[in-house]
Each structure stands twice: as structure tokens, then as C-alpha cells.
Length: 459
Image (cartoon, rainbow, N blue to C red):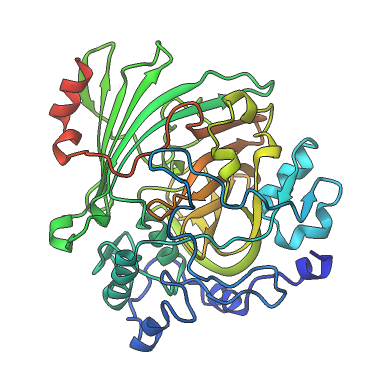
């Protein structure tokens, strides 16, 4: 990896064109041509990424990704690392980062400058992203009919697949993230730790269940009825927090119909509506280290920001983080003071869509501006730079993804939200001592009602 390669990894010409045209909210709908749709699965991946590698040879061609488990894998076990024999190509530190700045996000540059103990081990790029064939087929169907509605606050004409595989503006990219394939019926046991500057933490354990309506086989827009997924989060530890439950019905157009949410408070033994589980309200049991809309890197309504598509860049991003996912690691192995233990992290050079979100005039949010780095192969947000009202970088988020190849799909095994002002970070998704997420759960829609929440809370 040479310095000249890094310097030449800049925003593509398409990005400059789109930025100059100022594509933000209120985009006009223009159907994708049949010719463009025919490119999916040919010179584009089934979800719209560039199938070819880059000119420098540092990003390989996409050849199908990981579409099946490796030999010896048994369903239900932690995912084995298919790239365990890879060795780092280079290690980026605060001392040598200037050589690689062309491929570094603003957040990573700040991490390297602020924390001398942080480093980035860069491995060969493995384009492992893949989805089931039915998702690829649904994407081709959606590409012909999907449209932004209500000034971009919702999506119409799309179910199951990625709505905008060839995006024309920033809102389409973000909607691709919001509607990306994450399975249909999911159950996870996860840990969350708000780590102090000195490295102390109390592990909060959750049981998380999700029924993802949008991706269900046979789903139609009429059946969807504006509800993209049902979500439940139950705190099981520590004892002082155990028993709290959150249920949410995630609507596609949250301006037309806001997210419906309820919480069960074990102290009061009652269920109440929770209208504040949205936007920049603090996330549950996070010590205020992330907002509600930072869960899953970004979720919820898009109406408070203008979304500008900057273009594509080649950036070092967390990818194929199977070592971090391993059940051979303890929580203490992973969590260091100031940042996650870098010896367990894997970074690769990937092409990402860069989307700039700027707060609309008259709207309120603690983040004045956010920069999203979105994987071209999966539409997963991988990195986010978040700025305060002084336009200073405040927080930085990383989604350390793996291919859950038993599905297959790309999804974070760990989210890390770093607060530079507090010298702290939040690690969400720590499942190493528990069990791997199940994608064959048996959740039913009736399990996500206020009545079901009341019954479960009183057991």
C-alpha cells in the first residue's frame, strides 16, 4: 500500500457533480431505466455496488461474497473466521497517519491523534457482502418502482429489496441503510458497556427481539401498512436495571405516523407510552453517550436534516470483524480505557458512499452535522462523524460488521460510539460470553403489543 495510492483515493467525479447540484431533501422522483436495472448482477452487484475492483488493485472485484457457511460450521455457534490466515498489510498510528489520510475518515484521524494507544491494523480487502437470492430479485423489482414520498420522509413502491440500488441523492442512500436486509425474525443476547475514561464499566445485558416486516417473504406494500419492523428490548442485568422493557413499532414514514413505543417500568409495574424514544433523546442506559437515533448507526425519522450526497470514497473501514466476534474473547479482553482493544479490530479498504447530513433551519438536534460512510456492497452505515453546534467533531461511531453467512447478511457484531469531549465510549452488541444472534426466532406480531409487554413485565 503506497502513499501515492492513498493520495489518489479521493472522491469520485460523480460525487463532485452531485454535491454541486445540492441534492438534499425534496428530491424529484425519476425512475431507473430498464438498462440500469439490467446492470444489477452484472457490472454492479445485486444491491448496486461496483462489481469491479479499483484501478490500484487494492480493492478486488466482487465475486459473489460469502453466500454459505465454511466447512465445519454448525448452526448456532459463533461464526468462524473465514479469513483467519490473513495478516495485516499495514498498521496506521498517530505517527504515520499523514501517509494514509486520503483514506481515513475525520473520526479515525481524530482517534489516532487523540489516543496514542489506538492503532488501525489494515488487512486485505475481502468483499464478503452477500444476500439471499430472493433479496437480490426483490431489489430488481423495487428499483423499477421505488420512490421517495412526502418530501423524502417515506418510501413507496418498495418491499423486501433495496429500494434505490443506484441512488441519485443522499436520502436514497440513507433509506437503503434503513431498509437493508437484516433477516426476518431475530433474537439476540447482547451486552452494552459505557466505559469511563479510566476503563471502568458496568455491563448492561439485554434480550433483543425483532420481527422485520419489510423483509418477510410475500410482503406487499398493503400488508406492510407503514410498519417496517417490530422491536423489543428487555434489560436482564444488572439487578438495579433488570426488568425494564421497551417495545417499538418502527414506521417507514415517521412524520406521517411517528414511531409507536411503550416501556414497562418494573418499579411502577406499569406500561406507559414512550414518545421520547426518538431523535436526540438519550439512548436507554447509555450514560448519555449516544442518542436514540444512533442505535443501529442510524435509525428513525429523516426529517430534521438535509441529506447531501457527496459521492464515493475509498476509506479504511471496520469489516469482517470475526476476531472481535469470537466467543474466545471476554468482555475485559475487548474493552480498554479510551477505546476498544485495537488488537482485536480489523480494518479494510472499501468503497463507501459519503452522505452529509446538515440540520435544517428551525429544527433541533444535538448534532448540527453528521457525515455517514455507507458500504457500497451492503448499504450498512460503517462510520459516522458527528459534530456539535460549534461545528466541532464531538462523537465518532463505528459499526464492526461481519457477514452472518448462515443467512447471509452484513450486520455489526459491535457498535462503538466514542465521545471525544468526555473521553469515554459506548460499546453495544457485546455477545461474546452469551450466545450468537439467532435469525430463526419465533417472534409473533402479538408479542410486540402493550398487552404482551404488560404480561411479560409482571412474570
